[in-house]
Image (cartoon, rainbow, N blue to C red; front, side, top):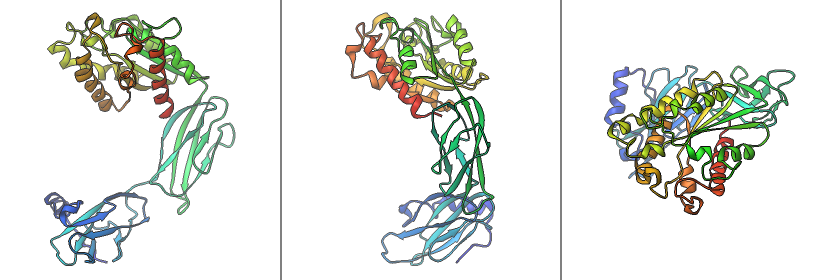
Length: 380
């Protein structure tokens, strides 16, 4: 084993920056895996390939003092101290050729660490790093059960429960998840005339169908307003409509999801001005923040609106596709919320849009099904 006694932070940064320990095969050496996550005192087998010199060996070293140990076979043993360490493989044939692996030594964690689940709806928990664990519900009664695979089955009534995972190698390494079990989840549908149901028959707007598809325990509320814009400077800003206040109250009344589908009316020429383009992202992020910070802590989604197959009402389908949709995706990424790609789901179906803008019953049903798949697929 070769362990460098000590390198200063400047020396380590210089080595990594200059590329002499780059993790790519371009350096002549390739280390696998190039990145890994392990628990304290866990071991990991690293392998190194010297390109252009078949059968040539490597020597191993750890850049950071106290960063664990590694033997001549490439077996790394993590230290007790949490941190990020770099293991370097250097070609024996040419000491100028090397590559490194980045090892993160972390504590055990459960994903999700905090979740809301509907009574009667099971959920799967996972640990990181992936190691053998024993699962247990901490409460003796009234909090359901968890399987050896981490599948949690909640109780039939509302409760706040805790599930623990303990590593089999070391019973002192434990992680904990807090799960709020509820009997109702609100689905708040924020939007414009498409959300309101224009173009669909009574009772067939996408929010009503979404509630039906989600099933018992989910309550969907339709808070669409015709002509509404994401832009606060728009001709009909959602922010000033009565549905803004009523959607806020509904979302705040209990846990659940908020689905925002705005942007179509923003493409109108009176709205999509230079000032409108410049403020759209900030207004989107502000609206997301408005719902995220409610006391019910809802999960927020941004729908990518359906295509505009005509220029009715001044709506510009090209602006929607090429300018608004990228900004909506950026908004979601910046705020860490999910997106629902309604646009792609509806693009092959112009026949679902009799007036080119508003979906009929079939189109609304497809929006609902697309949203349902996202909500259920990523819950919690």
